[in-house]
Image (cartoon, rainbow, N blue to C red; front, side, top):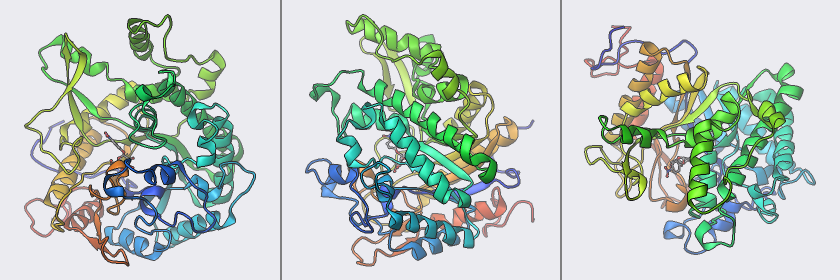
Length: 481
Ligand code: PNW
């Protein structure tokens, strides 16, 4: 097939899903409204020193009370699906089924009904990081009883919301939960491993429990709800593309390949068990650190079987490529490539080429699953400029790489979801980094939403199910000309 480097010809599959995403804590606000319990993010943001400018999600974008505005924004983008997450403590204030908060269920039912009335398919994430604080108080993801708690929570959502939902995501980015939450301490629950009297196996145990909890939720759906609801359930993992610093150096290839955090979660679920590479690297690091055995826990043969295959598609969050090299002093290290364009977030450079390579990698590594890109986007910080040319550039180039992966590499990509609908609480950096297609005016008590220029651009890609003709200044589709 002819690889058109320059442009943008061709279409995505019929029924391709075009959407935007959000998450509960980042947009809902209403932190003590409607019977909601407290989450670890409520506690974390209220602890001084954790969040830039002392920002919190107390009000966020007030989406809990501004459903109509959000639906209007979604309609303006003309998305076919909307990815949002359910706040666990809004449904189960203390995390257990002891008390089910009907007001919480009603809120999400109303949201689902409004979406369906607007002809927008919901994609619902069960866990986007806002664990009920009561569960953290008994150990959170470190305590394996949480697997049962999560399964019960999933069961309640499938039963009550499932008739209106075809697309589910169990967990958003387990890697970020494990590392930012339980090693670096920059996300809730804020455990800085080196400062705590905790075993350094913690991120591995947390991840082990998350993988099992995911599998249990998938099985509940499969056993109790699939026949009547017929939806798809999966997990969303985040992955950078790892590029060798010097393509002519074997060590750099090895360094790039040893960045295994995608496989940490995907391998047990898509292929069965932790990968041999993961087992080997963690064992080597453990022995080098003076331990007598690996920090990585083992799955029993029954567990391997029960986890393997618990997916209906592959959920992928992707933002950028990182450059890796092997340094004899410090082992594998990450480099910045100054030729890559920067964004409003220090960790995010604009590197569209990596997305096509990553999609191809996933196709080959994980058995050619249907892939939904569940997040992809770019930020700005500083003064407000509604003419967000960097975001138009970002979406044009990244989506073009998705199109090439689909048309030229036969990657089975079935959906694309932009992060994010609104400027929202960007976790530890508060409201300073803005990923929204819509600007949210935080000095307006009404938190009004205004479309940035990228809205009409993204919307024209959606309408064309491909790219507008670059020679037409008017966003006309290729095919119609
Ligand atoms: C994702 N990193 O998280 C999350 O799913 C979103 O909630 C978030 O707003 C979005 O990306 C933008 O950050 C990430 O440091 C957080 O590499 C941090 C990183 C990557 C993704």
